[in-house]
Length: 77
Image (cartoon, rainbow, N blue to C red):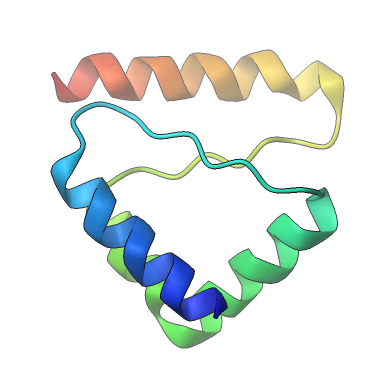
């Protein structure tokens, strides 16, 4: 199921301009899915379409990641 989710995200990412946000119910879930996608190769399919930025667990790092995300969106336009 995790790989199917990733495959679907990769297909959607191919057709959606700009950025995408994906929400997870927890950091633990996000980390587990990311690790699975790394092992299965699904992560590479997503990365062929979009840059990936993961929400940091530390609040002080949040703004840096969001700045990078917005910069990437505007660079790709």
